[in-house]
Length: 249
Image (cartoon, rainbow, N blue to C red; front, side, top):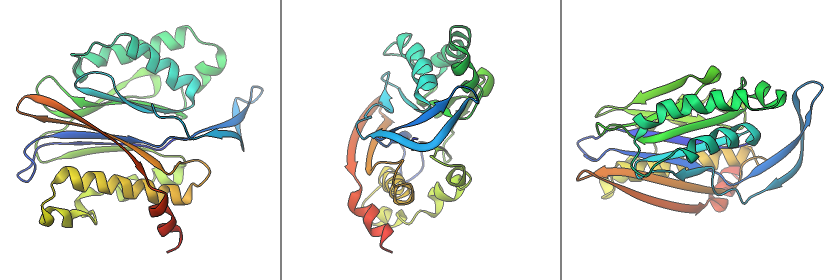
């Protein structure tokens, strides 16, 4: 399973430069797949903590996140990345994402075609539109591309979690307006600091419960627009001690 989080934040008085963040864990797990029922077994038969590319910067202006069933997400992502150019904005990816779905649908076996119409995979882009606004594109069931453009003063977020129970708590977990890290604004920090720390906390909280499926490493990718330029930052953060603290509470 996979833990992926995204946030697109419009400019505010305290942070006049809009930004997007995408995070991912590093664990890949493998379950037995039963071809007679098209279902995955519950038992984990293998796992690795070396998946460092669930999130990546694919253009100067866009980050890609993918996870879930790799046979599906990898095929879709591969199609998208092969048609990517460094200057592309989110606008340029709308037709490519739609074409990716059609291509995989027409050139895959019956197993992938079955999984293509489930919620077992995730492919999404966050970054900037040509007009400078931050936002997100997500490939939905049936090949539809959901587009979200975030104006000043607002935020859009998304959480791809390892269980339905956690997914249902998305609005609660991703409530940045009530973040316990807002105090950072009074200590010289800015909105970016608050959002990064909040996402690290959510990752730690989920990993403390999903000990088999989510790693203790959080990879953070940040794009921020200022002075008509897009600045990129990347962090690899070990959350082992934070996770232990939560488990011992």
